[in-house]
Structures are given as structure tokens and as C-alpha cells.
Length: 338
Image (tube, rainbow, N blue to C red):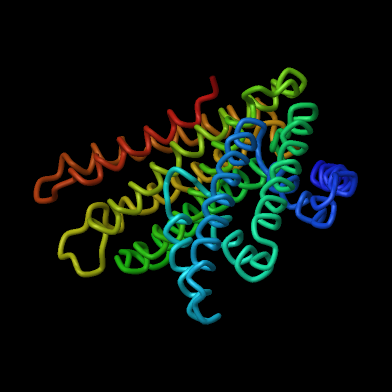
């Protein structure tokens, strides 16, 4: 059984064993337990406190509106409108939406029982959340799998971006700026998901006894995330430079037909180096990753030599091409394993 299922079962049992009238509302305890176990040890305690505050605020709002004896539709609208203000309150974090849930439950289900219902609702949620927090302390979550999936998706998106860019340079010449700007923007959600997953992993390592057992894998994942974050910045800069200086509407482009093949080769070797830089994966060993990075470095050096040779011929400005060499060198540095 999963941690959430165990916590929900224990919370339900605790609710049923509670004295009346709490036992009449035992089904609310598992809600708090599941909410608490769906996060890291540190965050679950903090978010449980935020949820309780939101529940009490929602209940107080509903009781206040109920005193006004307004028509049903107007009362519901007023409770929802007021509790939505709490839902957006930064002090409650992501748990602010509990204020809306609590307000509606208390207004629609609890008005006939005065304070009995809101107190039972809040009390059982708190009891369930406490069970979830304790279970997290005893068996803390360490979300290595979700962060690994997010990082693999980011790596795949970066590799696809580099391969597509190389193919464009090889087959079609100068780029259409709008097309590559759209590709650059499409990468942003994947990058943000990977960053969020790694931040979640970092937080999960706090107050977590399982970190010692998975120390090497955790360190490798965090290091890989740093590599990919650096590479994402590099790929973004590459697209920006080419969209600005290797466009179809420019009379003088940064590279031109003579240098585009060498640039495409550098981008493809960069993509292969990213594929090989995978911690604890079957795709590549450390030697494979080092060899792939060395091939990328050699391709960047050859491109630099070609640009310097072309720059000796007057009549063309290779400033943007030289800037892209600097960007690619940053990509090489991001791949170096510590």
C-alpha cells in the first residue's frame, strides 16, 4: 500500500473511534491525511498548518454569512467571493483553496448544527493531517523517480532542439526567426517542470533519514540537473543568436553557407554529449560521456578555427559567429562532471 493509502486508512480508523459527534464525520479525516502525505516531510507539516488556517477562515466566513439569513444563491456567492480572497493569500501558500472548500461545506451542510459541524470538520482534518505528518516522519518520501522523469524529458527536449537546429542549418540555410522563437518558447514549460522537480527533491532531503541510503543517486541527480539547467540556458542563447543573425531577411548573415556545416556538426555533437551525460542510467558510462564531451569540444574548436580563418577575408563581420563560439564553450563547461 502507498503512504497515502496507509495514512488514509489510519485516519479513517481514528475518525470512527473518536467520540460523538466527531465520529459522525469520520470521512473528513482521510482528506487531511492524503493532503499531508502528498508532499515532503518539511512541506507537509507547513502545508498542514496552512490548510488548518484556511479551513478555520472558511468556516468563520460561512458562519458569518449564515447569520445574515441571505437567500441561498446570494449566500453561496458571497461565501465563495470572500473565501477566494483567502485562497489567493500568500500566507496560506498552496493550501488557500481549502478556505473555499471549508466555506461551502459549512454553509451548505453545517448551518443546522451551529458550531458542531465546522469544529468536527476542522478537527478531523487536523487529526488526519497529523497522522500524515507522523507517517512522513517515520517513512519520509524521497521523490527521485519524478525528478528523474522530469530531467529525462528536459534532456530529450534539448537534444531534439539541437538536432532540429542542425538539420535546419544543413538543409534549409538561414532560419525563419518566428519558427525558432516559437521553438525556444516551447522549451520553457519543460525546463520549469524539471526545475520544480529538482527543487522538490532538494526539499525532500531535509529531515529525511533515507538520504543516506540513496545519497549517491541523490547527489548525481542534483548534479545532472545543474548540467541540464546550464545547457538549457546555452541552447536558449544559441537560438536567440541564430534567430537574430542567421535569418532569411538579412542581407548579411552570421555564418553563411561556408560555416553552417561546421556549426551543424558542433550542434549535433553537443546533442550526443547531452544524451551521454546521464547519471545512473544504462545509456552511457562515464567513459562514454567523457568521449562524447571531448568530441563536442573538438567540434567547437574546429568551428572556431574556421571562423578565424574566414575572418581574415575582408568584407564580412564575424562578431556574432564568435559570440556563438563563446556560448558553445559555456555548453562544454556545463557538461563537465564534478
